[in-house]
Length: 477
Image (cartoon, rainbow, N blue to C red):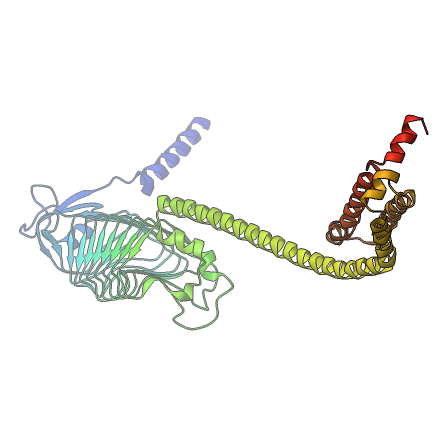
């Protein structure tokens, strides 16, 4: 009884696993429009894609030809064509875990339904109102596709995760890639050119995107337009790095507020990360002034890493030169002020000195005037000269020099010496060297010369020969 129950349980478990979708076997089918009454095998393909879907095929390979009608790829279905010669002329809807490869969708668009994970590779889409539309909350992977000559290239709705790489998105009537708010993912290595509006438009609110290494050029509006909407006012996290934004009609990067409103402080700068883009030849300039980016942000947006480093070095060198120049100017100004101060000081000193000299000259004149009478007594008077004349040569020869006259010479010497001493004492009242020198040179020196003259005359007179003097000398008297 126990063994029977165990067998039943095992059979139930086996049945669950066998009929689970996880274990469902992929069914491969072939489609060829030129086939009829086929069974979907390689040798006998189905005639239409719709029939292969009706038959539950999950791997569908479609040969060359044109295929009409709406195509709904159910969960897990992969459809692969034979390149551009496999032309689908109908609307394609993609559900979760679906794949579309190697086909040309002409005149209709591809829709990735809500919550669906879809893969599109080597697909060409032309002539649609919108090349590829997503309905949000899913994931779209696009590789090596050509989305051209449509109304709009991509329209990516709220909550989508996008992986768009190595594709050409060109000559569409509106934006190349139109991205709503809260879209995440990567847009890399694409050529997005000659679209009639912007290359890429993205609403920043809650978006987290890496837009890197794309060639975005010759679009009629801006290369990349980042947008603010009041209903999606949160900051974004969008990296714009390594792109070539060349020859677009408006800006390389534009900041737009289509519905009006006011952004948070530093909204654009905090929502966008730049790095080493090449931006040139755009009609209105590199970056919109509305972005209000600072210089370092602009450098990040427009220059390569090497250019930024070189610019930084150049700015540092210029700053160094400026600093050295300022220091030199400061030194020159300081030297100029020092010289001016010294000049003022010298002028002040000269003024003070001039005043002192003027005062000292007055003192000197006063000293000279004070001793003028005494100075006169240094010279031989007219009376002295009369005494000298009274004793003529003959008298002097017999009698000798007049002793009284010698005493007069000595008195004159003493008087001159006293005057000199008094004047020298008075010189202490004079402060300036110039006036002291003038007093010495023009007054004391003359007095000293006068002493010399008197002394010389005295000695000359005293030493004159006298007979009586000579006789007295013989007897020791």
